Amino acid sequence: MTPEFVTEIVQRTIEVSVLLSAPVLVSSLAIGLVVSLFQAVTQINEATLTFLPKILVAGLALAFFFPWMLSIIIRFTSDILMNFPNYTG
Image (cartoon, rainbow, N blue to C red):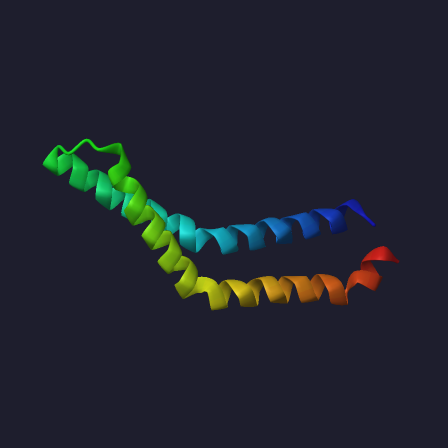
């Protein structure tokens, strides 16, 4: 195993991790911003007000993006497993 090969595998792993986490994180960030703006405009300073919308949006994002996320992880895993003999030899 060469250092370039290991670097490529680590880079692909990080890319897949970012792709899988991005939809949930971005949607939670967006709803958090909207709720924070609402709190600033109405001067409601309740800390627990942000949790329920974020949880709901994260769940909806997971439900919506799950097929896409599953296809990415299956493609990555099958690529690793199919090429495993090449990696060890």
